[in-house]
Amino acid sequence: MSSPDVAALYDRVAILELMARYCDRLDAYDIDGVAATFTIDARSDFGPGRGGSVLGRDNIRRRIASGQAVFRRTHHQLGHSTLQIAGDTASGVTAAITWHERMSGEQELLALRYVDEFSRVDAQWLIAHRRVEVSVVEGFEGTEWNWWPRLPPEV
Image (cartoon, rainbow, N blue to C red; front, side, top):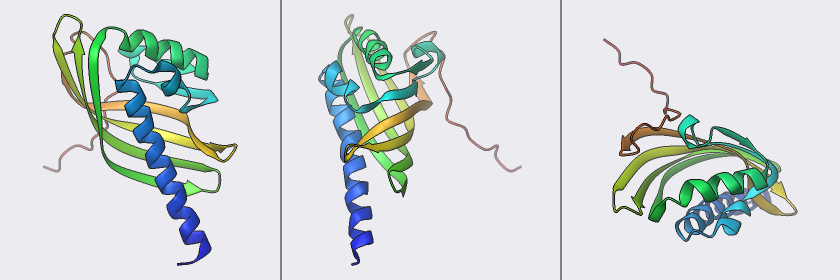
């Protein structure tokens, strides 16, 4: 394997570990740890019913803290991921299943995907832009979402 191939594999693993760290810190309600996965000037859009578009790490931190505070516990499980890496930037789409238990005991489930842009900052990969798109929602009554686009079936 050539040196560029090894570097590309290293970057891929580092981004996948970043994604896993985001989920791990979110499920632990370690809001500072979650915020640390974003660039200072990051943008996020978790959907219109979950705060809409937010700019800046501090604002993303506040949005995530308030949105997650209603849950007793959560579980975010990552699935397949596609990544395109070009120097110090990358983009990717990662599927996930997320489970939430509200303080009342009510349970909710989402099948979603993270549509991300990443930046390497001081030799560390971080999330520069995150958009959440859902395909399955159980619970979350009255919440508006960004829907995972799907082509119409051929008839």
